[in-house]
Image (cartoon, rainbow, N blue to C red; front, side, top):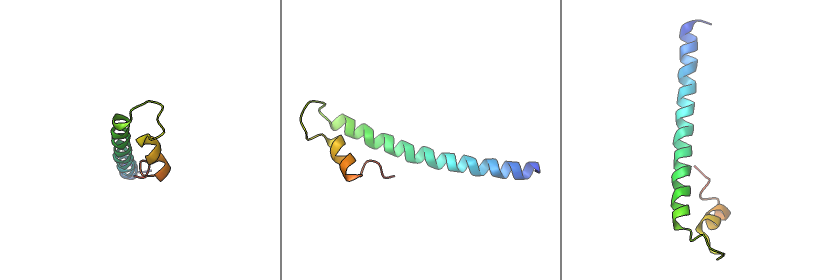
Length: 60
């Protein structure tokens, strides 16, 4: 392959990685908020579980 083709392909990979980083950062931030709002005791009303059940925390 020509070096220009390789460079273009590498840029495409970088863009895909940047998009994944954005998505994962958003998921991390959401989980951080949930962890901070969870009491961590034996009560069944855990905000983490509620979000997991609804699917809200894991949809980018």
